[in-house]
Amino acid sequence: MPNNSIKPAPYPYPIPRVDIDPDLEAAKKLNPWAVQEFFRIEALLRSKTVMDLYRAEGRTIASDVMLMLKFRFNWTVLDGSHHRYLDPRSEYKMPVPGIWLLTLEELMWLAGALSALAKKETSTLNRQFFHWVQDEVLWLCIDPALPPEVALKALRPVLTQRHTKGAKDAMKEPGKFDLSTWLDYLTCYDLRFRDGHSYDEIDQMVYDSQSGHEKRDRAKKAVMSVRGLIEAVQRNDSLRLSTI
Image 1 (tube, helix red, strand yellow):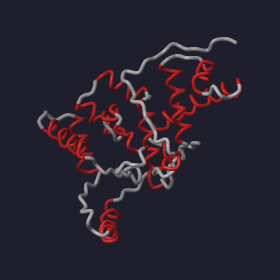
Image 2: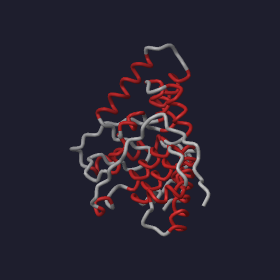
Image 3: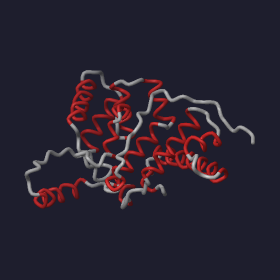
Image 4: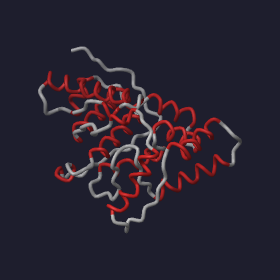
């Protein structure tokens, strides 16, 4: 059988390994939106766009801001900040994309980025960032002691007034990602493109318990699935991506 290995293309940064809760029942209780967000970020970390940004700018405030403006996260994901989405014990709950519950670390980062940019001369990045902060998001502080029904009643007219029609109006349900299946998909993709392994070698490393032909087909399908996800999230249309 011919060797179908390819030239390795190492990533410019290590992508932190994720350890999921061995309790499968607990994993089933994860917020589906949070699981989708985890895989959206994992896909983007493997995208040419994000890798090129890191190679060109490094891990700086400016590149952090660029990343936030384009994809709504920053380089803290290289420390595994997004792994909380897969932790059923985490107190952080992300209802849907477009709503952030900021940690203290994230709030401090935002304040620092705003302060750093405010001290610099006017630039396109500066204007874009301040436009996002001032006009594209709605910042709220809500006392958790307030009864939820009171908070929701007060927020509805505010949100209705500020709502702008767009592509997200079609957003109804999150994509369905089987956790263990898609973690294997990411492993297959890394073994293929980062390390240059052949599909046959990937079969042995990831799907060794399968029969030969079925394994090879499964490894190739895994790689193609991740490639499709990367292309989708770079277009910001991952919410419409069909997943398994």
